[in-house]
Length: 246
Image (cartoon, rainbow, N blue to C red; front, side, top):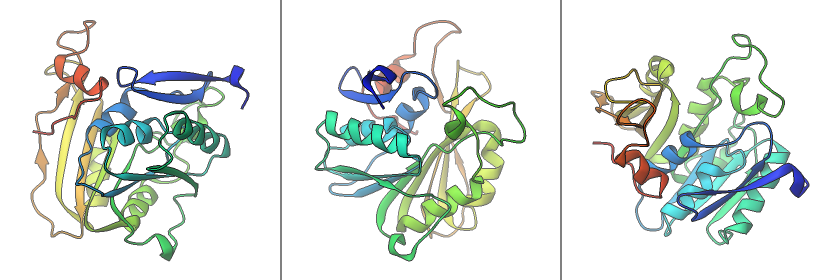
């Protein structure tokens, strides 16, 4: 893409630059919260399924400086932008982006990464009106949610953590897909204000552990009052801090 068609946007209080389309789908809150929710041990490898232009990937690389990250993406334009973001932030020693369709699960990728994470497309293309140009890949779930879960499970080492952010309305589907394959499932609702209905959920689980109770946390409110500034907890995430699950 030519520079006139992209923007260089600052995330995490200006610490990270994301190169993304000037029009069409543009990453924001979900990517930052997903990255903020991750924690890892020294030297762990993490992979993202469906990296897009790399917003969540780049924020995670900044937050976890002792880890290595790989992003998997099938869209060539997004891959180019993510590569530019990696170069712009001087992350090449700890991050790479690879061309791959998550519907495919080659044996070479099985049990490779210590952790995996994703922000899958949210909507069934048969259930909503067509999105604006440039937003189709991010919004239309032409690959079923089950395929995303299976890919994340496939690439993660036994005992490794899988983390996703998704619509709160999809929680039942997420639990149904994760339950047979994972344990220690935790759910963190994301609410616009305290007591409001959650619009998003963060959910994480460990591959291969025995099934057990699902832990549902109180969650995070993005604003203390409707129309007000971000809450202290949300602001900390947007400045590069960790999102505590408990």
